[in-house]
Image (cartoon, rainbow, N blue to C red):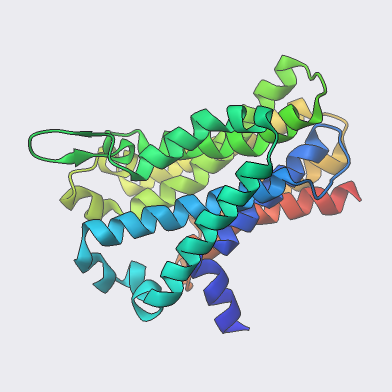
Length: 282
């Protein structure tokens, strides 16, 4: 069982399932019946493709990265990793070929942001620059892409008309949630980012202040969710449970010492939120 969990996390299948989970939650939050729709496969393979592409570029750009604890699994399963990258590329290509053109057009801006997050955007005399290297942009970019893709795809494919206030509320709420769980990743990478001359929130502030921002974002997420879905307990309750449990995971020193705290627990909060919404809707 442990080997399976390690594989799901290290292969990025786990985080891809989290994306699918949030998208299904979106269906319910829009008043739709949760359905295993083909666009969920787009979310799955797009996430799998991007996360493994980012890792591949990091390794190709810096061979020494393979020796870091972060890439230990890749070093031990290098051939399997290359096969996984190929699988994600082929899978993403197939689902894009089969997808509705409206869905692809809606995804295009987010796809470009995601790709240029990892791929060099322009070349200066001294270095290649990626979006993630632009000061303080990385965390906002991640939150925008996650909130946009997991909410807009069901909206566009449904063909229904929704109130703008409803959609903007959903986008802001999800942005706040993803923003909150991304801050601990920047705290973890503080030393590495300093060496790489990357500017992030934990570098601008102290670790404690950065965590306060994370908790404030989750508090705002809870307040907005209660106001937005007032009276819809099957949505409000799971979102509040998700928020409270995430605050605990972010703040607990004991939890931070666990294996796979970031890629297992923090990434898992998105998967957990989606599952909670589905369960309570039933």
